[in-house]
Length: 168
Image 1: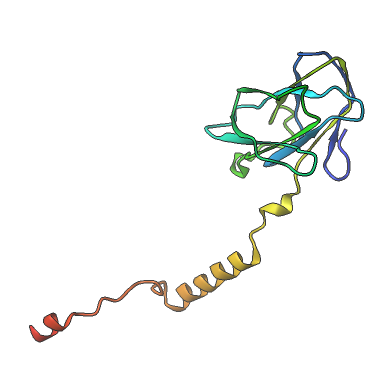
Image 2: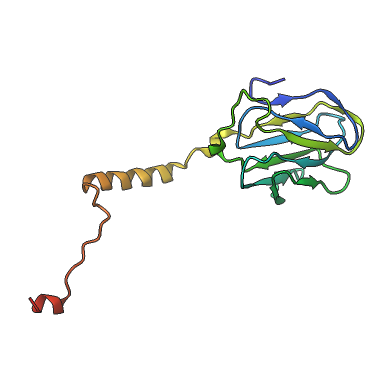
């Protein structure tokens, strides 16, 4: 089920150590979270979309904390009894995953015990990808300077040295 804010909700039976594949629409990352009373995540394996790694961020109770870069098709086992949530980041926007393709980003997870998985898979807020105003302003100023100079605004002109001027 997909909520109006883009969060995917699940309700399915799970077995200890048995992989479950999750795949919502396109994004540059996802937050995975169990539901109330669900078994903890024991491991995660991410799809192979190309030659890049994913960033894994477990939740420390207050914030997302970078743990490791995770290669595609490599299983990462969470420490201890498992985790109740984690974030995956680093899906290149250029991958242009088809949001109507149910197999575009299939995530395999295992659970630490039997039970029911009623958790969610949520794309992080997309506004974080918008350039900062200062960066956009600097780019705009540079572009105006380039146009005003006929495309030559940043070309340096070499002044002849005193020796070469006297040799003429």
